[in-house]
Image 1 (cartoon, one colour):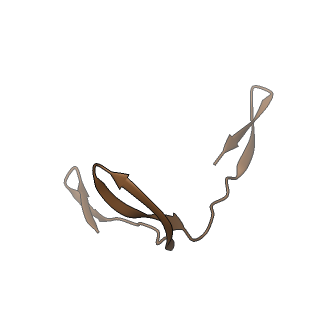
Image 2 (image 1 turned 120 degrees about the vertical axis):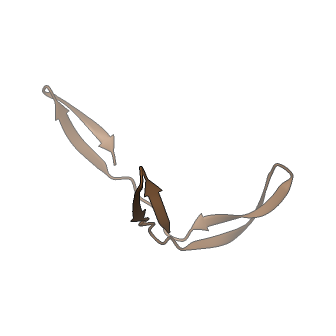
Length: 60
């Protein structure tokens, strides 16, 4: 997709995600549509960081 920001054109780099339609139907503003779910589940990776000697976890 061709996009532009402050007069500079660039191509978007959208990753392809495979989806499957589930039997669940949703309704928004009176329109019914099938719910799509990602074929692959995403995993949240935790990073152990240290700030001024205190360790903490951050999800990335």
